[in-house]
Length: 265
Image 1: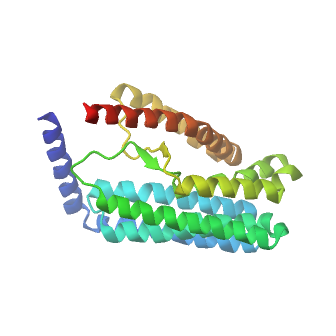
Image 2 (image 1 turned 120 degrees about the vertical axis):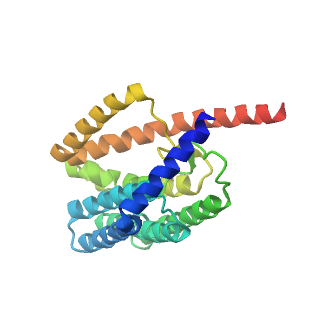
């Protein structure tokens, strides 16, 4: 009964937001298009050899991608059009842009093999996005969403293939600009994107009230660190995400097994 009342309150709040902010329905698509522009601009920076700006543009695209869906759900204006537009923008910002950045930075040394790695990453990104759209449409809205993604999301994969470049920014070590290292990272992320492995998702995360204030404080510290030490903060965040993957996979597989046992009973 309590869940029904909470659902009704949420719907009423969304209705009020739509009435008070009639232009709010355009904000999510606007953010999606800004993310697309960031991805396209990252390609331009890569062609000019401005690696720092290129990486920053991809990260900014990821921020817009994080915001557009949440604002769409907040205003209750999420739609099939928005989902398709989001996927098209993601293919550019997190498929084509980061792989072109890595190619112009180091993979060009491998010639045809380096370009083949770029194509494989773009193909896997397109497959990941198409599968996500199909599964989202097939999902019953009355059923609770899974607390995980299937495969690594494209924004995370895009940032992770830039990890060797981020390390190169900080240490200026020729080791990190080795095309074999970038090719290995691209191969790993390509496989993880199209895999069926469960990976962490913050979309349906429910945070207890007692934990909200400490998390807000932690977020403030992280934002401050990102302003002062952007590359170090992003590197640490990506490394923590990598470490969390096997833990999350084991945890979510245990959830699946428990559900299977309950269904058998």
